Image 1: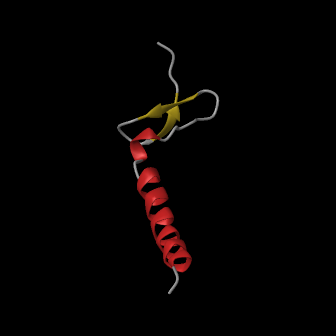
Image 2 (image 1 turned 90 degrees about the vertical axis):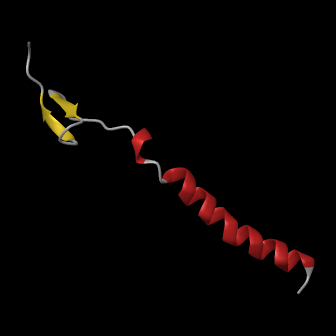
Length: 52
């Protein structure tokens, strides 16, 4: 194999693995709820916002 072929294979193998590793942390995802709803971390869902 030529050097260019080996380099291309290495890039094609490592790029998907690196992109998966960067996106696998779920703690940094933003959650948006509909108006009048709020995010409840305990139940991991949107709940109706109650006024206090």
